[in-house]
Image (cartoon, rainbow, N blue to C red; front, side, top):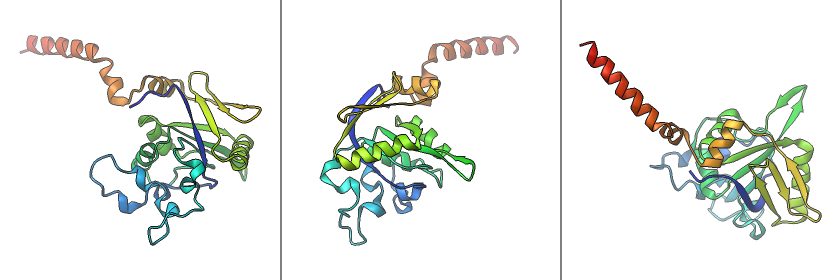
Length: 214
């Protein structure tokens, strides 16, 4: 997968909480063969009317957000089923990062992302960023005031710079292991192959030991 270091892109808003994986990629598209071609169906039921016409009220259909690569949403994004197709759709549409807030409801902490969705994002090169709710409110307010606004996401520095006047900077936390995988563009298979020499040496020692017992 492509490494994630520093990325600048247009910020698109999805001002909804509890967006489940069926809303991200409806079930009728799961029968596609292979792992490509899902981007065109991202948020399909919201992007299009029943007759197939684009819904002009949906942000991704508006000219100001054409080519957006940074998505800002509300809490519990990616809940529902464990389908990895949802992440494929997000990535193949062109989003490199998704930003969402955590919040407290009834004394319980509601996360920014469902666990399985967040884990699948990391495996597919999509950076998920969790911010406080008031920080995400500021992002939404800026994007609604100035559609087409860009942001720079700096993974090494763990910072988001929103290019307003003056600029706004948001700091975020990220798992150190995941950070290294993303910086290097490694998935789990590539990470394993990073130790190919050690694996080969182990197999050779094992073969010798096995032969000695016969």
